[in-house]
Length: 314
Image 1 (cartoon, rainbow, N blue to C red):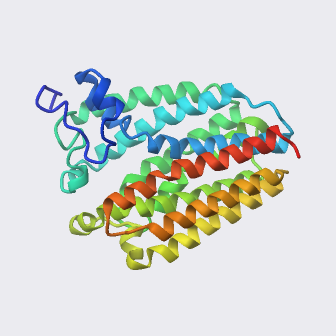
Image 2: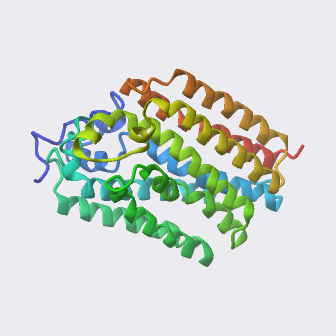
Image 3: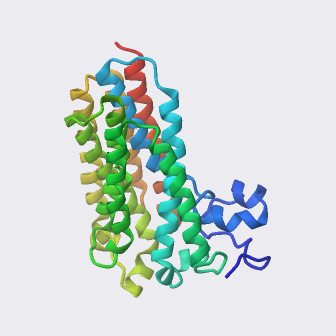
């Protein structure tokens, strides 16, 4: 179906009220901006933070005290484009399931705002933007970035066959934790792998919280998630995954030569994670969404600590 006056102003149910897409953008652009989740930028932040962490970690290891703002900008553009392409691909693959789940029925494809063909063309356009960004990197980083595509392609189908789709999402969403190091050094080393593992653990934690919003509908339509697997034991599992995130972050920073500022940041994030777990109500979708979104601040604290450690050597 082609976007029209009856459908192009259907706000997606979990988008923040009065977001910039709903308020300011021309009607014909809204379905496509919603398709790439421009009205819900939290996913872009969660994809971007591991990229920026990796760059800052590499600057620590290399003794670089002047941040490369162009590299940070490239990651920001790439994360926006590839998150949009990935969400569009996911919505194409999941369109029949999305039509059966209350929270996702208003998405552009199941609600008829965008056709499958139109969505596919839009995904290709966003992918070319991502490719243009990737080609600015060194040859090793380009090859590494291309390597993520297989995991990205698999993710939408994992929730149909395993209770651990969040792990596969972590593999895909955390890839940037390798990219910054690869661009600075032209290869990979143990600190980058540990940072990647930390980002995977973090992703499993926050996406489990997110998945609790849909657990009843997912169970009815036959989809799986860690939210369904963990159930009432979600909080102990979150303690495990968030705890591993902190340990792996600290280990990565130690090997990269980071100083005390990173560990102050990790302590602050530990408090933040503790708040998430202590106040989480897995049976309240609004509560889950708020705690999920708060991971933007968690990622920002880690990046700020890594960057401060690179710039301000104690």
